[in-house]
Image (cartoon, rainbow, N blue to C red; front, top):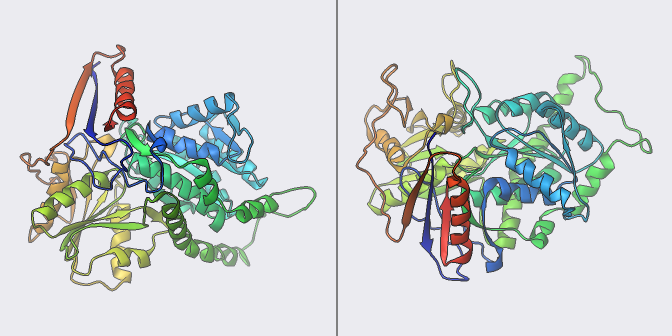
Length: 492
């Protein structure tokens, strides 16, 4: 077996804030730099992967963590278990209870019980493990229990098993009632984990916070951590108290989990509409609060590109980092293109989407990292089509494509190919990018000669034979470069 690691770094001055401008990347990389930490001190800079960055937030904000390992989410549970064994306290001054169950279904059941008791709880999972949690997810959402689960989005086993990343698992949970918040980078995974925990307490809708398996979960990057005081300020004490008071107790009996007949079930089910109607505005407010505390700005839908863009791409996850760099490159060369990053995927706020969409747009490509066989389009594509219909938008050409299944790398070359397809008079309504499909003929061509500028960037590839320490050594190397030299560093 041959394995290899890739890393790169770029110079920075000590004490200098991370800027929102990204450094150049090639086909095996996404962004290096992350949003400005603003008021954060230099001491806040650390070199971590997304799993550790998310686990750090989840641990500090939880009292019960029910776990069961599954690739690539296992490191989150392992970090929490290690911290608890060392009696590290959470923000509330107690050491969280860590329980490894017999399966992911058991972990979800334990979480459900903890939440009904008024406890702050979390878990981590992916792929088939997430599917085992779905029955409890319906109950947790139906009972409006504040909760965040962190998912390293991973392929589901179909014709073959793949331990690698795409969005087929999280897209299978759209109907459960969980709000779905997507992170694109290591820094975002850290920050949006905080936003999810803060928002769920305020709106009572449970959250699934997800980020790409391996590509983000195992990517090592330079980030600015949220310190305890800022994290504590994000949590509303009254919301925590209300969650405690709703917990089942023999001292305050309350009936829950009943059976209902046709005379009332429909009416009660529709009662949740007001809660879900508030989610987008609650998340938006939490994002504004985080910006005030850290200087890092996030939006439900973020637009990058020309103000008069005619061609845009809509996507979510780590692909947005690659797309953003390509958009900046193309706009610098006079092309009218743009990108909409989707962060709050569920509930999908049509209002916020249209606030982001440039009025000049004439063609949209929606990228999905999943395949739904038999459907007339993939999930995000259908959502955007529906949003345009609700907004009575006419004269906009819209196409949908699949990319990156099973961690197939999404490169700047592929990103440019999507924008090139939109130029055509009759682009493919449904397409794939990143593979050569000589069976159904859905793939689009890529310009292999396209390359982003790499000024000021050093890159290296390290090859190993397997079990020779290459991966571990290079992880340590890039952490040393990022922590002890005047460089930003990334490795994957």
